Every structure is written in C-alpha cells, then in structure tokens.
Length: 264
Length: 226
Image 1: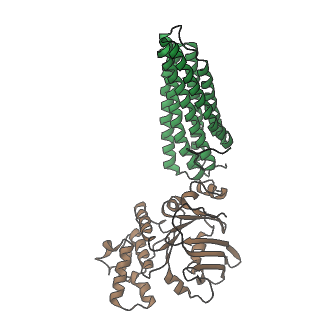
Image 2: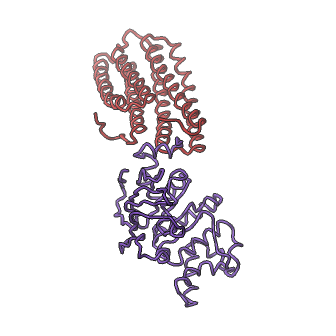
Image 3: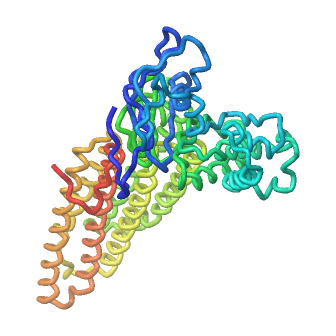
C-alpha cells in the first residue's frame, strides 16, 4: 500500500486511525492488518468488490460485531483527540456508539413518531429535559435538511415518510447525539437519483462539522462525495489516497483494474 | 492492459482508438500531397487536398461524438479516462493539422497559378515538411503503442522544426531584398513554412497527450526529461 500524496494545502487532522486492524468471523480472517487514517471533517470512501471487507471494516468503528459471538478484533482503532482505542476491552460499546453514529443501506426508522425517532438517542443518553430534547430534535432535523418537510407532522409515524425522507430521518437520528464520526453503509443504494443527490448534498454540508466514513458500491458516488478513498480487496487495503488522484491516476494496478471495470 | 468485464466497452474504445489512427493517416497524406502539389506545381492535386479537408473535419466531429457517448455510457476512470480525454484533444490537433495542409495547398495553387521564373526554390520547405511529417507519424505510432520514450523524443524534435522555420525566413528575406518581384511568392512561402512549423507544434501537443495517457502526468509547458 502506498501513502497518499495530498496536494491540499490545508493541514489534515486525524480523527480516527486503524492500526494493524485484523478482524475474524470465527476462524475466517475478514480484515488483514489494516492501517489507515480517517481525516477529521473529511469524507473518506471505502470501495471494493463484494466480500472485500469494507462493510466489516466500517462496522468495527462502532463495535457492531460485538453483537455476535465468535467475532474477534485484533489491533486498534484509535479515536482522537483523546487517543481512545475503541476496541480495548474496557471500552463500553454503547458509549462508542454515542460518539460514532451509523446510517444503513435501507432506511430503518423505529416504529415510532418522527419526533421520537430523533429523540431516542437523547433519551438513551439520559436527557430528560423536554425543552432540551425539543431543541435538539429540531436542530438535528434542520441539519439533516428534513425540518421544513416534517415540522408540521412530527407526531406522525416515521413510516409515513418517503424512502429518501426516512433516510434523512435516520441521519437526523444519528446527528442528535452530536457524534464525532458518522458511518454510512451504502446509504443511497435503495434511493432514487433525486433522493441520492439530496443525501450527497447533505454529506457535503455535514462534513463541515463531522467526520464521515462511507461504504459505497457506486464509484461515481465515491468520486463525487469523498476527499479520500480506500480500495480494499479480499480483506487487504490495496490503496488509500486522495480521491482526485485515485480516480485519475491510481498507483496500484489492482485499483486501476477495479475502477475501470476490468475486474474479474 | 487486460480487458474490461464489458466486451462492448473494449470494442467501443478500440474502435475510437483505431479511428484516431485512421484520421492521423488521412491528415498525414494531406500534408504529403499538399507539399507534392507545391513542389510539382500540380494544381489539380492542390484542389484535391483542399476538397478532402471536409473528410478530416467530419472525422473530428464523429470522434468527438463517440467520445461523449462513451463518457455518458461508461463513465471511464483512471487510464480509460485519460485515454478519452487525450483522444478528444488529439482529434482537435489533428483537425488543425488538416487545416494547415489545406492552407499549404491553397498557397501552392496560388504560387503556381501566378508562376514566374523568379519563384524562389522550395527545397528547404520540403525538408522542413519531411521533418514535420516524420514527427506526426512517430507521434501516431507512440499513440498506438503507448510509447512514452518515443513521445518524449518527438517533443524534443519540435525545436528542430522551429529552427528550420527561422532559417527559411532569413533566406526568403534575402530573396525579397535582392528582387522585389519575388515578394508575393516569398510571402506565400513564409505562410507555408509557418504552417509546417505549426504542424510540428500540433504533433508535439499530441506527443504530450501520449505521456499523459501512460503516466498521468501533464508535461505541457514544462521541460520533458530524457
């Protein structure tokens, strides 16, 4: 793997960093000693063919794999600025998920009202002030560019919303707890092009405040939304680089073959 | 480079590349025939060259259209993207070379229609033209073979044609000073020499695109390493 040569003049801060991270589903080693940074207030895209480990890698960041027995992490994911290894035995996964929000492929609102979907994380966190919850819910819905569409029907079931709106609701739900890092696992693959464009626009706005890591099968999407791109194959990180360079002049032949459609 | 998962993509890209080479071949023959018309005084040949330019133009339009189609359908990336990008620029340079050949043919026709015993010799023009044709042909070879080293050589050779142009200019100035009756013809030969010099510049541009396709580096307006 080669290091990216960034020609961005700004100084990059590392928000999170995988260090020799391996992951095992039982005996199967799905990630093979991956080391790469996730830069603060940037969008980093993970691309690669099915089964390359990109979703597995993403899910390590909020300890999703803890839910299944037999899974095992090796190595570290260090979150800055406090230098916390998210995978350390003493670290509470619930606390990790407060700092790292996740949005999935298919919108998955809770069977609750629009308001309660967004308020959920705050209540879990122990927030009891009605006023503060209302403020936070409005703010999160504003930030997810959904407020104007739902402000008059906050008490209606979330399932009444369209697919694109439901996905923005899930983003609002993730934003409500002020996460430092947002994980997107193919967030637009179930959406039409217009809803996709609105989510991409939203990501562009959100990165002023929050760091984003996104898994996508759509390479044009990776090229459009991300600042950095990592190409993975069979559990290995093949290339990590500045998106503008990776899609025009990748360093590794394997990357070139994949992004030009010469794969397999 | 290995094949795309999509066979049709390979066919489309291959067809575009081979038509760029065909366009290059036509343009090369246009220059050659224009220079022949100049040296032999064959006015019918001049007319043919002038008439044939529309074919070069049509090839440019068709190739640009096919490149746009390929971009829309395939969203080419990395090496494919650089290839398409370079082809779109290459066909522009080829079309301009076609215009220069047509210009040479017009001048040749004008010189020989006027024709007098006082016409200055065009030996040096022929020599410069051979050098320009060689640059063009080698550039097209480099494009076909994706040969960076050959392309760098073409780029360096452009300076030679620029020197020849200046030398022709000096020589023509002496003719004009010695015998003002040669001024009209001499000026037309200046335009021809200038057209040849421009053909060298366009070939150099195309050689730079070959380096961009292969290495991904933009060497325009820089010194090319050996």
